[in-house]
Length: 278
Image (spheres, rainbow, N blue to C red):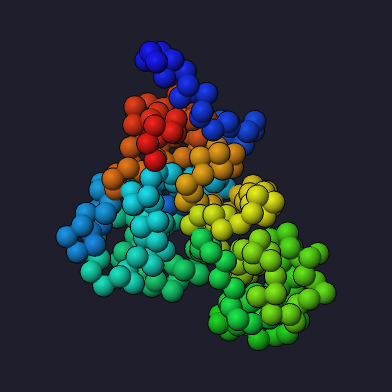
């Protein structure tokens, strides 16, 4: 096979960008600004000179092969990575202009503003109602009427209210996997975050549930900045406004999703999205 035909095949196997899913987005305010971030697990240099800006009311996809630093970077944004005792880091990440590594920036305050949705749905072993009310209660809300309003508003925000409104006392484990994941998103919304971090939120879901979560993400970006780690190239192309390609702990390329998937500037990006390695 000639080089020309290999390139033609590579282009043919690229993910298709859904029209209007990754449009030429306007300049938006920066929520997170990462500069010269380096992170080590012991002697392992996991993140190398990361420079990346996350914008409000956009979906930012982080793609790359396994072990390239995607999830580590995501967990750095809410400082969950610090739960590993051998972690050290240099550089800065500012959240709305404040350095999140500054000692006066309480991690509890950060996580109040930044919600997290994990790869596997992780509802609490409580009722559907209590899953949503838990966060507001932790923050001191005890008024039953106020809690009822928050629960309904959050479940509506996650587009699951109509499916569970008559089952609020049922254990959350009685829900399907896709419903559990949307419940976890609703749990995030209950604390009124500015940013939602998602670590492969649909990898454990069937195609129908995946489609519902992707539709939800598109609606949520009207009000939130969303950062999603995904191995699914088609998903990144469908739902994100900007895409960052990570490789060996570095950001190889970061641009509008339409540019990344149609005219990548780096050959390594071209090779990855075309399926030559992964």
